[in-house]
Image 1 (cartoon, rainbow, N blue to C red):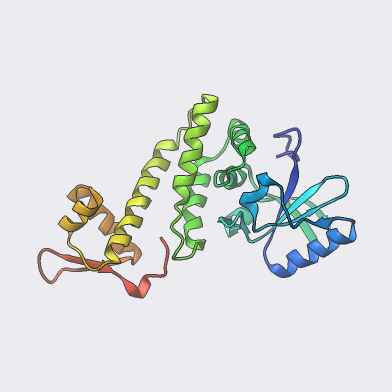
Image 2 (cartoon, rainbow, N blue to C red):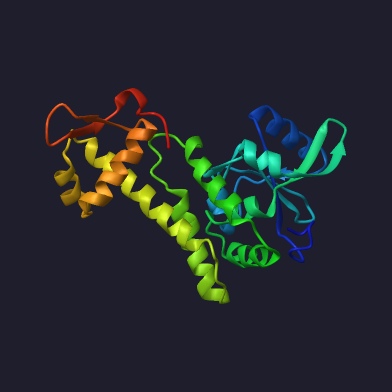
Length: 248
């Protein structure tokens, strides 16, 4: 953001590399330049505990992430494709993420200043379709035991941003619908882990209408998440264990 002129200053530099080998090489280079490994990161960096943090005697701090940022979002092919090259230093290409991807990355942190940054980015003009698509694709990079729904994180921050700064995000309704749908799918999977169920049982467990449940079941079936036994009525629905490790 500082390089683009979206903010006046920054307390640290966030770098993301694709593997541990590159991270070790960069950290070694920084140490050679006088930086020290910070084993007790500042309090505001507690959410970034997976970062390799190095600081210089002058107070400059670099947070070095490997593939994932703050143990949450992943450096995806889409993020890399949208990034812009800043400089080339021998074999090192330094690129900066798009405004849309920075906006999304800041939506999953708890640092107080990130909401200010999100508002500043939004005022520059953002492509909501890009943000929503990347948010959706991030689910494919999380493990099967990760219950976090990125749309819910983003929705909470967007609503907070609107309230604090008097903004109106035109794509918030789409985000809200997606977050609600993904939450319902997640809860349905949890219920089906207990065993096969019929629509009426799912309706009672999730407090949803039959129409809503049938729509969710149809979506999950298309994704390979559930199998419907149509051999008898009412239809029995169970998890598809053959595709259970795939994420929507």
